[in-house]
Length: 429
Image (cartoon, rainbow, N blue to C red; front, top):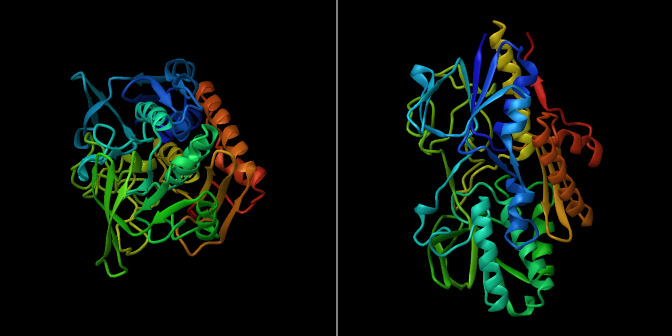
């Protein structure tokens, strides 16, 4: 009998536990360690920030589903991982021992790396439900007293899609409130060009997003390295290709939302052989750490090197399809190890993304996520907004019911009509 522990219960960790329960025997134990017992659907946070969703509509109590699936839930959260001892120390002083561990913690938000950054200082955030609710309060004040807005992503960020989403969602909400004409908007990003997305573009994302920003009268600054945030102002250097400063912008802002850089969470950071200097988990093509070979990792906390040199540091996103393929590969490999076999499954690391713009949106598919690609496709239309709503409803139902059925592959195959994507590939034996 094996005990498999999943550390983290976000998008990757929750479906990881469900898939493990599907592939392991009933004698094997599956446990989840998380801070609290509530799952929150992060992709809906931009809607929360403008009042289109309430907290209770995007959250799920994991306890009933875990009980039904025979998954032990530890809501105390992790204080420190001790991989040499095969145990996770919890915040209440107790520990959980494991035979196999899957790290799915997600990231820590590195607001402290820039002066004046974060919800406790001068900017808003949609990275957490609590941040999004605070951003909604700030949005209400903006509507009551309109002023300039800055949206974007800072240096080192790797998650650009939600920044574009929120810029257009906020623009739509301001139009609905009849104050858009009083709110100048600027998109400030560390990307070398609009639509780079940390992926060197996908299809015509550059042209599509530039056109969309122009159509909504949103100005932009690329190659931006933020110096600091002040009350009512964003100070950022725009860099040349060689990294020298082209110009320094002082952009007025009554409302600022910029996505931060990520790093690994404190419970796993600075463990030699497990993490890189930013605290992300080092894994091979089987999602397995080579020093601690009973430790696997999936999701945003996995270390992926940047695609190439850019004037301002830009990370690589871990998209939903990519995470799902990591999860399925990891579940397969752990099941094989439990049976005395060797890991042979690899995630495909394809990217399928729906970027909602409030009344439209852009969808893109990259296979593989890192170029050169076999599939490099993007499209736009009102159908993307409808698809994102469907995605939300489907995924929340999946979490409530305890199902592990992959969503993104179904989307690619049935909705987008792309039949070249496969969730997992296997080594030849």
